[in-house]
Length: 473
Image (tube, rainbow, N blue to C red; front, side, top):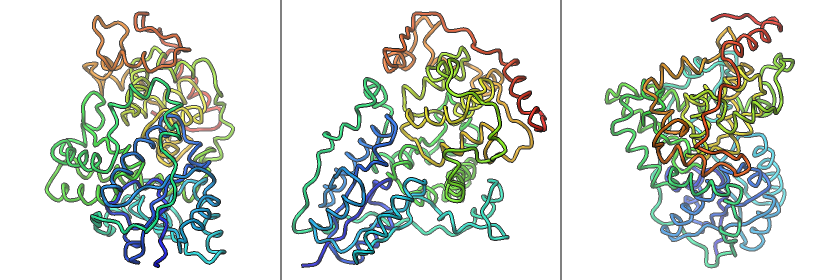
């Protein structure tokens, strides 16, 4: 009997354009897809863990349609994989690479353990367009600034996506599997799960549909519409890319085709895909970006830890409408518009002088599209401690930003109920999703500003200048 191969799925919940799968299929061996709820995955925040469960359910259905099934196991990866090898007689294990520090440490240990036992253990690309170590400066180092990174990779060859197989070869006997429902991945979401659920589109088929919808029209205006949170101007593919429900090569080639057709916004969209690549490039080469200041000279900056103003920020109750609408959008939909993310992050770290780690951890708990690299780079960029090429202390003014990007108040009305005679369902949904312990009530007056914008800006600039920083703008 031909021994099977184990396919260890993580953030690659698809059959289309998956190098790991293509390599395994070429062997002709039976394939056993596996997902392991290991300690690293257990550590996910409430929203991403719940959204992962939705993705696993959709992926299991896709595997069933292809004549296969998804085996679920819980426990440390090394011990669980070894147990599956013993149960199935598998000759090796394949997986798609991940790049965050915890995943790299885990995967390195798994590979060493398996190879020490004479088993094949092969990791594959699939989550990125370019492996982080393959993009180098002229001096052989890594890129610290986005623009030269973009110039280097924009014309690089990206292999064409490989279509999904119609069938997967199955083993004669399947190992036992946990029940997904028994994992209770939704538990930490409490009553918020029912509020966020209508805003998610899990699964490979939904991701492909979402890409088609975006490239059928909205991409043409993406260069301007992407900054308007009150419009549907973005692809909304972030949640699908996070769980690998669509391949990045598939997205790249589709957007590139739109660019060659003359779509005005397609190049800007391609640049945003490369921003995602750049965040992984930095995380691979400087893994401390996920936990410490990327620029060590910022270690002495006088940020606060947790504080009452930061807690008002988490609850969307700062009295700053653009910021509050952003935080409430995240609680209602599980995501946040990118322009709003920048404003909310700048406000917390600059106007409230609160450490970016407070915001990073809150987003990691609340975002269904949480991505370890993008979240870390985004927060450090906004805080000033990360890879921002600007020579001055960047501070976004929420009041002027809202005049520019939400001039008619569409976004604010969508998510802020207070003061409206007939608030919409999403504005009210925030109060249904928020923990009861917060004691929020849409009938109460909207809160006053917790910090004067001019005073908050001056305080931040003073702190920056006191450290010898140059203040401009």
